[in-house]
Image 1 (cartoon, rainbow, N blue to C red):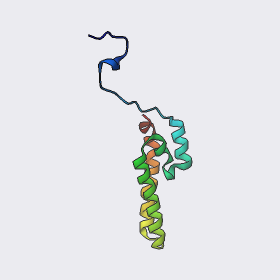
Image 2: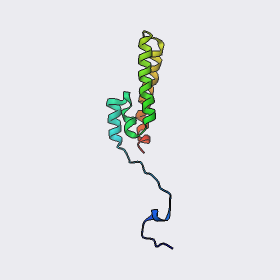
Image 3: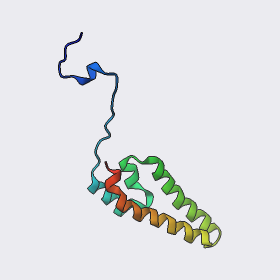
Image 4: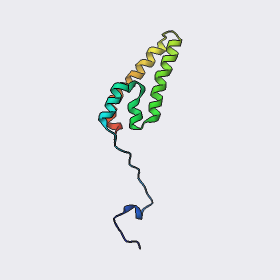
Length: 96
């Protein structure tokens, strides 16, 4: 039987990865200055939703402008802006 030397990992094959705590202040600064391009989401490690946010903005602008200011542009920009402002509330929960 092995002696316990204070190392819990010696007795278990289970490894827990702890995500580094990110700064909420930095996340809010990124949201304020670069929130439209999802910089705060990339900083907090939510890369997939950050890419979706950028694609929503880019797709809305390309399709909306190509269709000469169609309602798609306005609907897409409203959805995108709601997502950006909802992130202001979600940042403390995302940083955990």
